[in-house]
Image (cartoon, rainbow, N blue to C red):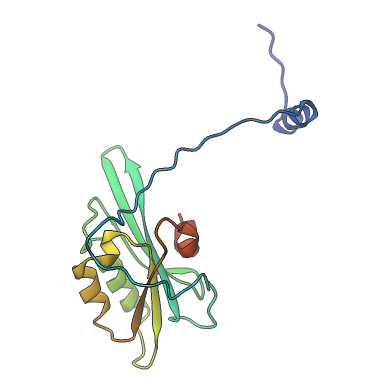
Length: 164
């Protein structure tokens, strides 16, 4: 069998010349369960991902991490001002108390809110962000306004989604 050595650049050039291109299909897996009984809220962020100071808008998301021992779930809370992760949770369960609630509590410790500050907390419509346990936790500081992406629209939460 003859072997030909060629760089990626050479192959791309030859493929362009021949008018062919590779097809790479990446399987998309829906991971957000937004088919739940809990109420959702309107999108208050409206893709305004830049703020002039910290604690104006936070974004949160959960990603799945496969390990040899099983799945882990990483929840992050990111301040849109400086894109820093200010709260997080890594756990092997998807329960709200261990994901969204725990990361919110950490964020509030790392970036305490002033009494007169209004904060937009943006997430997807997943059950961890819509359930009663999370809603009661996020409503403790009266200055947080909840915001959720439109169903199936990852661009509405692009900062948190792109962290992963």
